[in-house]
Amino acid sequence: MKFLKDVDFKNKRVLLRAGFNVPIENGIIKDDWRIRATLPTIKYILKQPKSKLVIISHLGRPDGKANPDYSLRVVADRLSELLGKEVKFIEDILSPEGDNIIQSLGEGEIALVENIRFYPEEEQGNEQFAIEISHHFGVFVNDAFCDSHRAHASISVIPKFKPSCAGLIMEKEIGELTKALNPPKRPSLAIIGGIKIETKLPVIEELAKVYDIILVGGKIGIEAQEKNIKLQENVILPEDYVDGKDIGPKTAEKYAKVIEAAAFAVWNGALGKFEEVEYAAGTMAVFNALCKADSYKIAGGGETVEIIQNYKKNDCFDFISSGGGAMLEFLAGEKLPGIIALEENA
Ligand code: 3PG
Image 1 (tube, helix red, strand yellow):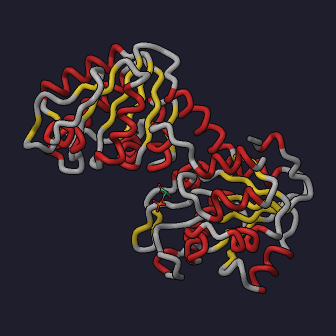
Image 2 (cartoon, rainbow, N blue to C red):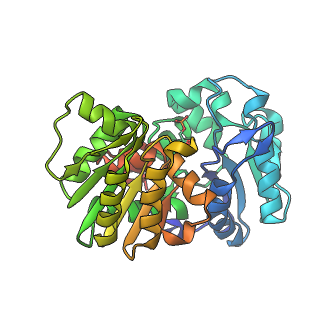
């Protein structure tokens, strides 16, 4: 796989796939973390002599149809504020107007394309579409780790036709999550919570092969017990609960002690229904124990990142993954289509 430093961007028109799927409510971005996280890659590319940059991303699930509720225009405005420079907006990358904006981009200029999922061909992984959206460009950069579990045109198909490399987020995610798959220090500990057993079970089973201890919480813990799912011996399930919606105090105390003793920890998923205060204690006990612990700590997943951000504790973690489903699939030992494409078509 190639990385930014391996590619000559001089004089090139660059196409960047970013992971700008951010939460938006009533036209306001609720959390711009994924946009800010992409700034180093954007700045790196724009710093190269005479480079020009066009960014594509998706937002939400508009089902292959243009829909103003899923417009990336607010993201273009936010990006422009963050960069302190104009970000042009391309409404339709397949139109003559779109061609025009791309062709007339000057040195160091940047444009963002409207939600790429407005075209049904994106999710179909259509090759012709991938060619059409990338034909203006000399290089393709994928920095959308969080979307790289999708075999979509702008993720896993463009690299078949363009010299491609990984952006800085992608590079860091692969490095850190590879560490999480092969914990370098012992005792190693994984804490897996959340709601959907079908997405978490493969992760628990994979990590249990290499980790010393796996602590399970959240609805998945209850389901594992109710369904009598056979788990490896090093997988610990809660011993008490609060109304079946949070791990109980005994479990929380026991989990906190295990966390204190670990040298390497990975955390994904809340331990209870933390959005209701009466069921937040278990998750907070685990979170606080992690914050205090002196171990190498990796965290990720939508609700997990939300908790860390709400309490402004990003600094307590050595790495926070931008991936939801992508992080889980990676930790379950699956090869992500976006990463395979970069490896095969560098
Ligand atoms: C994410 O936010 O985790 C990704 O953008 C994936 O979105 P999707 O599940 O709609 O493909």
